[in-house]
Image 1 (cartoon, rainbow, N blue to C red):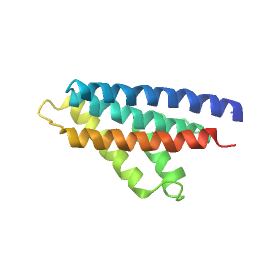
Image 2: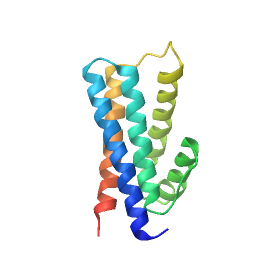
Image 3: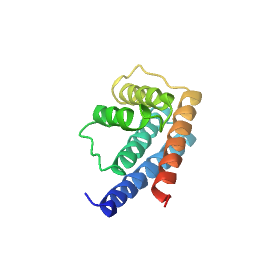
Image 4: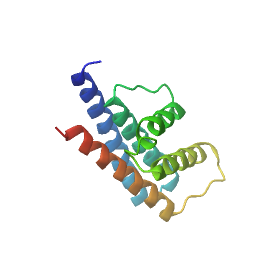
Length: 131
């Protein structure tokens, strides 16, 4: 994969991440917290894929994306260990939101997930636009 392809893939993933983040924020305005927490996770997931694309890495699954993020960015110290933890929690929240009809999400939890995803998107944006 060429450097140009890596950048193109990363930018495409980041655009999807930003759209998911925007959707999460709008869903909160309508009180749709289950859907908002799901979209916040997908914002983080696509930001993760964007970051991995900068290294030419293409995960095959959600779990694979987390594994590659941990291996190539968290364990190397490029991202804080807390990133690995909150992404795992966000993924579990998404699964609960999508499949567990008894799951309840507070506005505070959803706001935290949105803020975490926003922070990851901003960090990835800086990497992509850095010379």
